[in-house]
Length: 73
Image 1 (cartoon, rainbow, N blue to C red):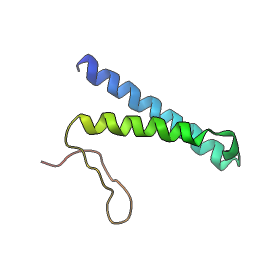
Image 2 (cartoon, rainbow, N blue to C red; image 1 turned 180 degrees about the vertical axis):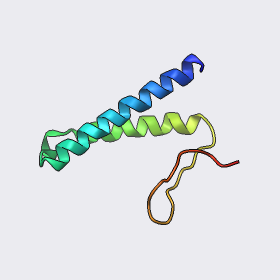
Image 3 (cartoon, rainbow, N blue to C red; image 1 turned 180 degrees about the horizontal axis):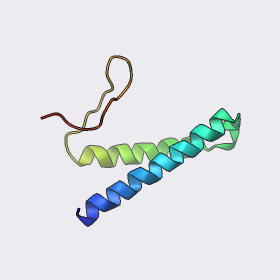
Image 4 (cartoon, rainbow, N blue to C red; image 1 turned 45 degrees about the horizontal axis):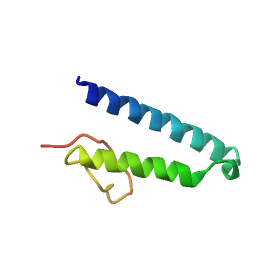
């Protein structure tokens, strides 16, 4: 694993933790305490970074869900 790949993996894990925290606060009725604009900005930045890494699935399936991030070749 290259250092770039390792850094990307760490970043994605941090985003997962961020979204876990956001989901917890929303479920607890504390959405007004979250800077949703900042969360959206972080997600947009990560999306831009991921798109720059190559061909990735961009759209969910017809049910609105993404089953796997693995590309099928």
